[in-house]
Image (cartoon, rainbow, N blue to C red):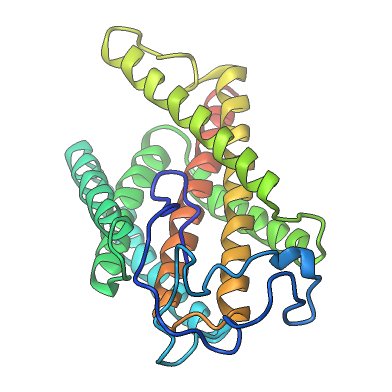
Length: 277
């Protein structure tokens, strides 16, 4: 299972091919789990595919994904809640935690197999970063905005889940390509904004305030929603095709990074909106 996160994508990463199970032997284009055949034009876990599993062990189930994701998200929330309660958010803590989380994420992204230690370590440092950032904004810029951002993240996630289950969103190759192109453009704009800010432009490209900032944040939320649909598709494929149980940790990693992305973009929009009013 590959992460659909825009930064930590494992697209193109190869694993050693292993013996196929019953799902891996299913003919290309055959219906799986009652789903239309066109949703499964290729088996991502068959021998020779770029994510071939070692299927000698137990196959992943939806319960495995839920438990691992809950554990990872809980690891994010624990330090985040503690840091918010300290009322002394420090910039150096925020930057340091963000860098460590980023490095751990990169290491996991380039590994052939998931490492629970790396994933939970990433989650812990990401929680410290979110806690310090949220505490700073809530204390000095927009009181109460963190609760609104959490509720907004839940609302976006629930909306995407309903839309995916109702097949209002269909994850196809064209959809995936569009999301990849949009993510590339979005990240390039973020890099340009950082460069402009570093070389003297106080507000960078203007994405931190006003109507332009709100529009940019809304675009980020929509992009995060698209990432979440890709994550749901990958979880569904892993369960349907009998991926190995360890893939549940990769699902947890991908879902967590996507939810963090959505939270940060919702927080951006609400912070700008509250500070401008």
